[in-house]
Image 1 (spheres, rainbow, N blue to C red):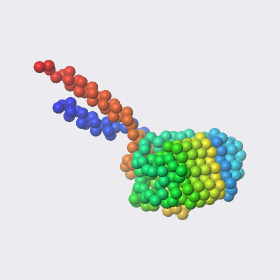
Image 2 (cartoon, one colour):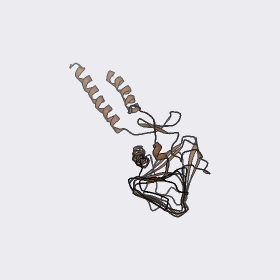
Image 3 (tube, rainbow, N blue to C red):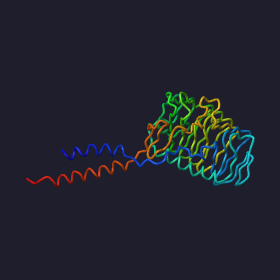
Image 4 (cartoon, helix red, strand yellow):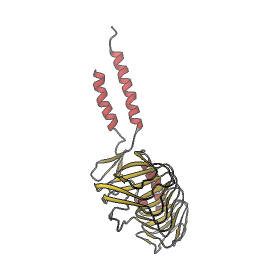
Length: 298
């Protein structure tokens, strides 16, 4: 009985225990958050695009369709609220932060598993895994923040993210600290006239076909290229109802130890730690073994 009394609080402690809290850090690092478009190999643009936020590439140096110079910062009239950045220290830091951000999002797990096509759904904040398909959005998806100023949506894709022409993502009832992240295991393609929202973090490449827009978010490619064709991408979010939200980058959300917390310190997502329960199990076995040795033999 004494062993069981000890086991119960040990179990509770094991569930609650996580890594020692460190300094809070944003999901998107400061340098990364300044980019509306970031590629690794190249960034290619068919003018005229409208970009609010910086355009960058690293470790590659090639940016076409914008005023650009290898290994330098330049200005382009298509880009406001930022610069065109070819493999400078800032772009290099942003790429390192992109890898970290993708790893953080992946570590949140699969959450609720959905079908391939998100059209017609209304989804509250949460972590979702989307099945592979010929299209992942053939109509309108509504994301309802339920009045939470720091609402968080994370969509996990094991392979591609593909939209159909004219598809729409609408974010409603969310605030300026909210975050919307599309964590893509390979490449993402937004087809013509798609009206998208949120931050696409793709392992390989991102393509926006003619007149596709990301009204409030970013196109961030970890190891591949970003290809644009007369597109609008904005981290300023003007006209979306999310003005000041830093491109739905989770401005009110921080990673602290093994959890993501909102601006009030409330846990909104927890990074699973399978090792914690394993350690608890080992300790529990040892506890009962010790008890057995202490029980006198009749």
